[in-house]
Image (cartoon, rainbow, N blue to C red; front, side, top):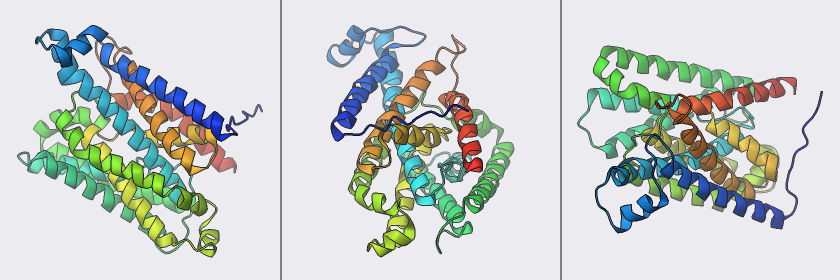
Length: 339
């Protein structure tokens, strides 16, 4: 059996250079997201949209669709990836992610419930209920697995996550079955998509996401200590209970806001953290920025691909991430089983 050796960039200088190169590539992906699609647009169209707006078809598409879409993919991709890093650190489980541990399904259920029974509520309330759903789901899963009392066993966590996910998904289906109109409107959202998303909604959650990113940076040293093991971390003077609650809150913000804006996009939070550690190891001062940048690149690239796979129609980006991420999920599951 051939084993793939980790790249694991050694020096801080090499990590910084690669990160800078990835940021440049991210900018290229962002530009590609703005210009590529069924209707071709040019850099001049983009420039004129914000300097000399003339209400042309290309400018309308750029302003109302492409720019919100690209910004959504950028922020949601980075946030989902970072939430996966936090979940895997918290649970010591390489298969952990917001989707696998019920967070996405809990957030999605509350969103569907609100859209079905309270369609006239403002977007602010919809976002709030998405956060509530994510918080309830993660507390249920982590609590059932015994995490609030001590260490979490992988099997218990996986079983709890599957149970809570099934619980929320079943109630989501009940709500949709009772309200066919809502089902038609929200089915595309449930697959996970950045297409047609409101820039206003993204701007409402963006401050929460940016603050969560910054807090993760500030906690990087504590996360390094915590990753050594909870008992050792306690011996080194770390307040592990406070850190665990902080991680849960950050995951709720990152995953809850992401679901509120783009729906439950699958496997970004599972795939990207592993690829990040493959590049830079486990030091969080590098894992955090790399995971944000790589998550954004991944979702932007998947969204661009979604426009051409069944051209001229489009796939929801959640379907593309699932296609890409499923083989990797199987690999991680088999690797964890062998270990």
